[in-house]
Length: 541
Image 1 (cartoon, helix red, strand yellow):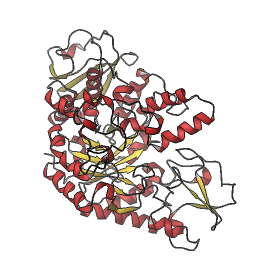
Image 2 (tube, rainbow, N blue to C red):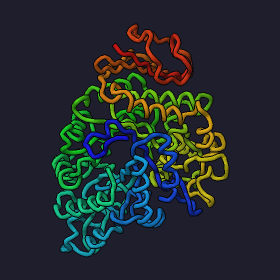
Image 3 (tube, rainbow, N blue to C red):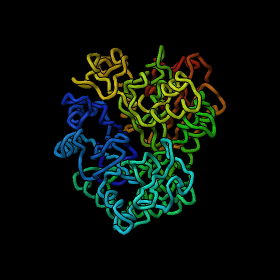
Image 4 (spheres, rainbow, N blue to C red):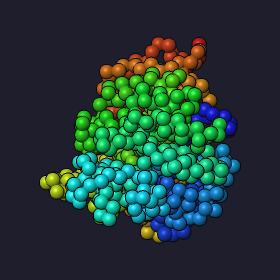
């Protein structure tokens, strides 16, 4: 068990993201709850994870599935009472599992007491907790657009002002220039630390220093000043783990976010690799096949850039992304093999891996009728694209490939009704393939995707070369094979992965003759690589 009283324990850890609404329902209302998470802790302990990234469970009107917080110190009743949260923290800790809460510090809900006060008058002390500009009806301060569509400005007639919001209008941006506001947020964080929470995932943290007059949303001039103060004032315990979601991060900025001295955050959650399969300069909805050489170059850049100078997160799935086996693997004939391949490829690298619920089962994308989707991003996209002249079928294909609800369908526990998620009507339909793809089946099959993840988690703890070794990319221009070595003293690791459904040639470096196979998804490695084959070889000396 990791010693979590010391800074840096996250470098040996593997985290598991839970989207509570879709994980396990225990009261039959069709929505996952905290008691459901508690009921599945033994499953997670068997998997071997060290911490749970718990997507937001704070009180919220749920305009953006909990990323619009109305009370930072209360649990939303849909998930249960505070006592359930306290029990979850205690029960998880007893199993060596830390709770990492998902904290939104860039914006609040418009139902938060601060904003309710802020809209009363310009003289209200809370008015300056948000970002306001004077203006006239129909003439916003500029033409900035919100992430989910529409203007980034909303007019309040009795104030004669617009407030700024980077997401939906019900998510007004907080004004980090206001010191009292910042101190208030630090107090909320301390509340949870005192309850035993051992870390925080910080949603869109690179946007807190926005300057809308200059059209700056991410990476504002005062960003790292704010982060250093946040770390100093709120994350002062030695073992607190922090991970910053930063869509706009590059390697140099990431070195500041995750500097080894701990002055800002423990690690960065960046997205450069995950944005490579859409047309350059366009949105994620304009998908292209993954350009493997570019992907390898990206991963190499991050592995080299942060080695000894910072710390990265390793992930391919989360609540904002489509299922990786459908995206970069093969969710048909080769689903199991390609899911294992992707896992082995990623978990051999330096960084802290994150497993998104169901990823360890090889869960896939779903195809639902339009009226079954719940995500505001999907619904706004449909309206905008139809208005722009795209056909219904064209827009639906985009949604099937890239919609966020692909990752939000209920966790598939059993082959039974509603996949064992609920006895009621699930808030989002269950993927029909739960009859074949579910936890019960995975646990009963020693060759399942689940046990590949279990083994990868164990290997990270067993071998320092996986945690700390240097990285060398092999065959960088190969459009089918991703292979690399890791080296630490006399310990050497080779990871090779075939991203295609065809056999491909691959000559292992001679230095790995006689190496031990740590893990493989297709029996003992032979010459070349079979369809979607992947393995790790280890040798000393």
